[in-house]
Image 1: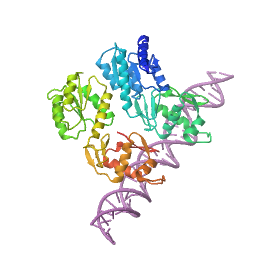
Image 2: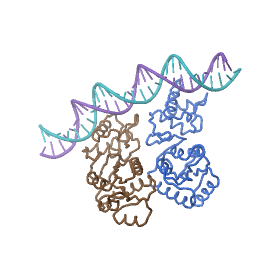
Image 3: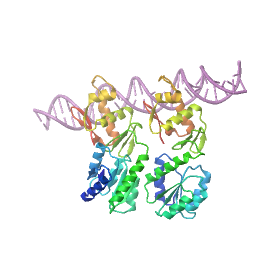
Image 4: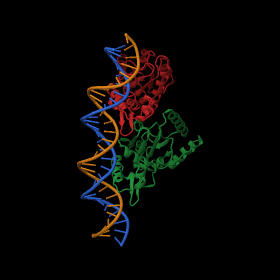
Length: 215
Length: 215
DNA sequence: GGCGATTGTCAGGGGTTTGTAAAGACGCGT
DNA sequence: ACGCGTCTTTACAAACCCCTGACAATCGCC
């Protein structure tokens, strides 16, 4: 994925990456990057720092090391580089840059990434990342402690991200209930999740139906 | 051990190594490096060349291949690299570098070093090191005496570090039980391990499921 | 704006899960 | 058979989570 607001540079980078046999998805804003990341399996992000709205640093932070990042910046300042690397970037290219150098670095980072232990079954939606095997959840980069019910509930919601999920469906899937008994349990747990994740908008209530997870 | 006079870089490197589960000792001069090497058991040295006083080359020479060395230099000169490798360095990273690349190289060098005759297969997680062949465990530098069950249990947990391991899984893998019988054996042994290792947080309990080893 | 239905919020009791200490069971070598 | 160390069981205490039920807030609709 290439995140770059300048059309010339974006197209150039995409062209060169595709010439090397990669499939490149080009988005023009940080918001779009986060949305598409949740939607598509992305192996690497080429990330411009100077973006309108959510800037590259913020995007990098939200990615939280889940996907390798190659930073791209107009300035050749050490400060930027250090901040970027601290936020989890894997490599760094200063504008003006040679597209071939960029392609080479992308290749190198992907090769290195292949050595890393496979990051098991991980689901990401917006700022939230859920790792099943480790039973860990991070929101906006920081780890969040969830109880069993909370975790199962979040997993179900993320698995059906973008779709409306009814209370009865949740009761059956997460709680194992058969009868759609009258209980406020679901609401209580959803509220708890919203509070712990710190992004209340992530789980939206669809009045009269249930809930929907969306970035 | 990280030998680096620049505070920013030193802290950065240490942070990334610790994130990978290593314990990092950071010293700022060649003299300190040699002193500390004699005092602590060090598995690997990340060594800056440009040091005041005794420089990196000299330190490398004094180490004499006893401990693996990853060189770190501001310059990207072939000359330095050759000299460094001739002096016994195992790998080489040029500044500016990605800390994650450095961490990856450290890991690779340690893996290679593990293949060398002297050391058996060793697993490390945070402050704890487990040597299978020798059946030895050290925590925070000092050796810990474990019984058979305790050792097997710890080995299984470390082998699955970062993942949640259920009680039944442990009963089957470590005890050879088939039936998920009602027994508090696992808890008792986990408690014993926690006490002996002295780092209660290393084995975390995941309520309703089991345990997870994490640094 | 007002009304009814739906959803959010809060705090506490109850029940389950886990920690811990101590005693019993077992195996092993002498 | 005895002593010793290890493993397992038992019993109890502590921690924790989950649900409940009442009440407040909000929404949709008229």
